[in-house]
Amino acid sequence: QIPQYGNAVSIISGVIIIVLLVFITIKKYYAANPAMFGFILFLILTIFTSSLARVDVGFLSRYNIFATLLIICFSISIIGIYSQKINRSHILIFTLLSLGFNLYSFKYNIDDMKKMKEILTEGAVLANVGDYSLLVYPDSASVKTLVLAGIQNNIYKLPDFSLKTFAANDININSKTVTSDVSNTYNNFVNNDRYVYMNGWVNSDKKPIGKNSKIYAVFRSDKNLHVLNTTTMRRKELNEKNKQSITDNTSYSLALIKKDMGVAPGVYDLGFYIERGDGTYSYIYTDEEINF
Image (cartoon, rainbow, N blue to C red):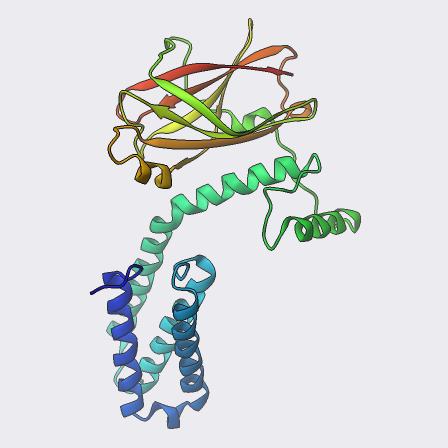
């Protein structure tokens, strides 16, 4: 039986690692390059011990470095063993495989990279007004100390943000009508003289909000209308709890510094526009008013 956190890729990878280790041992690679052989053993032991202690988070990026180094070391060892038989065609094939692996890896991780950029942008926005709660690695206090030290020593400065940083210029909702099929729930909502920070999720009782949906925050006054991107994430844990319901749950978050946004002064109604990705949409307004 496959363990709860096991999958075909990880199991096959483990078998391949053992086979390669046995192979280079039979070929007495430990005698030809004891340093590389020792490093391979070190990486394998590190991976095995980490998998026992950190089985639930083994696929996080900070653990992927061990597998990446192991692939590199095994590649070097195979080249060393067959160095006399390698010709240009082998080098070309190896180069193409390497390029293919890196291109696939980039494509596979691009969404996570975009998500991390959005999260770090929100953290930097709040850090500009003294709130480091979203910058949590290794912890908020340490991040604050490092950032302030960098600013004081002219090493680092938090970036400035304007409305165009968040503006969804390709979304035109002037002709859209407000719908009533979505409700909004806040996890956090802060609206003071300095900044706006909100996160929560929207629920649909009629049609699920699927994984291809995108949530936009809408700020509307008598004279102006601004549509802004939010950081969006499917609420998988809530979806699991609502298996009997057609309601899917999609979360959002957004942080803005009011004085830096360049928004025309006035009172703005806060709304949300949900593009479902299939040509349909939902469009609601909340009871919140934002003063710029």
